Length: 345
Image (cartoon, rainbow, N blue to C red; front, side, top):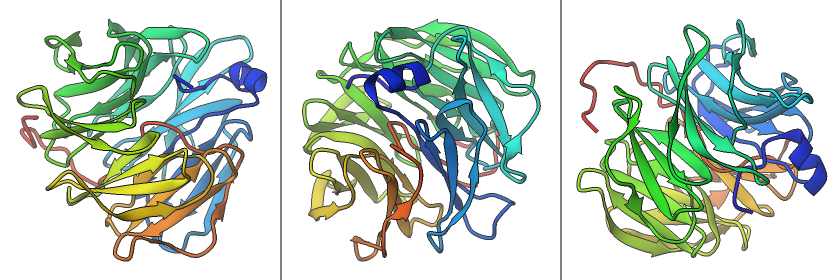
């Protein structure tokens, strides 16, 4: 499984699906909400991250894929495919949980996506499991248009935007590398960073200085984003999704083969404690805005597990959602307010 299986036609052939979870502060609920996209079911499960209750279920499709939320939390951006093969990004108002305005048409297929801090730019990686792409589409969410496409490596999967919005990092799954895009010029900035193997999901430390990349060779690579080199790697079995807590102290990695979450101490880049058993085939991982809970989409099932970050234990019963929830590139709304010069990274 080398790419996000986003399109319904792909999912139907393989009896397989992909989705994405995103955590954000939203005006619709008193607590942060987790938005979990279930492709085969064609729904979005909205979860209260304080009570673990499913608050509502949205049907926005027809064939919904990954979701990214602007870090300030006002909008969610959902990849959507149509039976005629056309593709788009639907903009969701998180206060009303309804589609807002026109969808943004894409010039190709899609894997995953990420939003900048303002929420005025969204970056979409191109491709499907059948037809790997080599581009990142840049979208203007205000004008609701695709601005350009940027050539990167083969089969780009995970994508993440730096805290300042100045750089976009892209995991080139087939090339064993990470490309860096300059957001001001929409061009690739320098040579890609080699990580070997097949990089999948990406996560950034809150200050943007460290980039973590999960890889098919049972490693998580730690990258210095200033020096643009690999500092070290951490051994994790079958690592897929990854998320970092708001304090930058811990990284949470989905061990898909063992149905567990592995915790990495980011100060030492060592694994902390024993793996935390969750459901079957975990992929997408997200930490709530207060850093008190980790949410894990169990891709091989129909549930989401919640973990207490103090005890590193699963809280209560798994949360029932749709079929095959969660995939690479979980995006977390920090609740931050954009300010120029917020971070140079």
